[in-house]
Length: 241
Length: 214
Image (tube, rainbow over all chains, first blue to last red; front, top):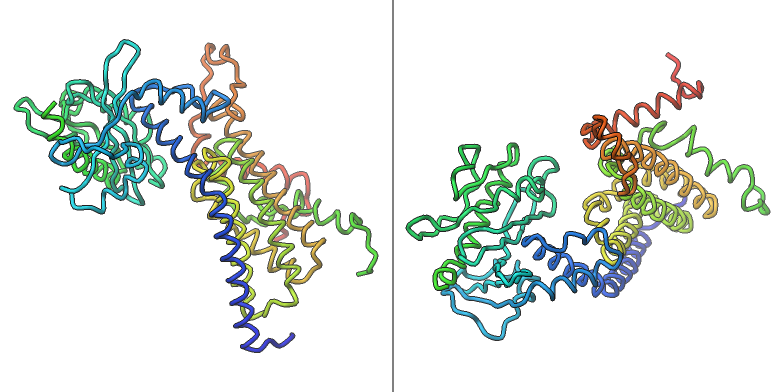
């Protein structure tokens, strides 16, 4: 076997690593705009899905234009509120939603809370808020749409990066998401109670709870905490309405 | 080896043909089973995975073969891994840019091509000792062999599990009206193992050379 000196091995590794690093960063920089666009479209599709629009997204040829069209058609307004429920001028709700993980690093009182206004064909309004939290293996997020009483949930959708398939990953399935429809986040006295994700007690008749996923306890708990934390930021705003 | 060997000589063709059948990486060498179970629920991700593995495998085989006299044996495994990992990250980036939905479906499994033992195995066993062209063919052959099984398995799983192929309904509604039901088991990973098992059984009953003597 040919003998290689330590110096040779060292230089070989250094050159190899430099070439690889340059190549990968170049490609990453080149493809970044396209990847960002894909993410934007995905967020818009999710926002629309929380109000049960854009259902044909997987059937149409030009998906990007379809989503953009539907988004500008139905999402008629958006604004950003702070913890006290005051509207913050000069902030773009969609920009903040794209980088919603940045909000989690801030003190709760300093966070910004985006709201999207949906107008249906009859002129009725829904208010969509993004939520983001921690599952078992990674981040989970979702969009909750409220009816114009700012209390009753009209629709909810969730997604995740890598929850366990068949268990925690079930949060993005229709059976789980549809449980949220018609639930209320304020009790009769008008106090904020969020939506609890509970182990199968009688969640059907409880307007403030949904049935958790068996075997997906940590994801379910994460979702529970996500809702409580994120929605509590909107309480002052919702109460003022 | 003669200098003027034709590009597609019998020996070179064998490099492509053998992994499709009698030395198939999945059914004979039983490598890469993990990903074969995970991404064969539907035909489309299986095809994308196949294309990704073909690209990674062929290119990494050529790169390692070109470098084989420069690579110090003491760090060869590291070099092989760096080459594979680089290619896989490239594939992942490209999928994220041009096939976002599919990349979401494949999620971690694209990254896990790095740990696909077929690729490491071929680099170690073949590319480190052979010329680039032969290595390229060997890479193609093995990746096709792997992809062939993925596609067969996902064909059956999607057909019986969801009644569709590539997302299009192929089992007519009238069957469902007569009480036909999709087999939910097919969608779960264990059935992939059963389907792979059936393929191995069929292959071995047709080719007695593969049956172990003991």
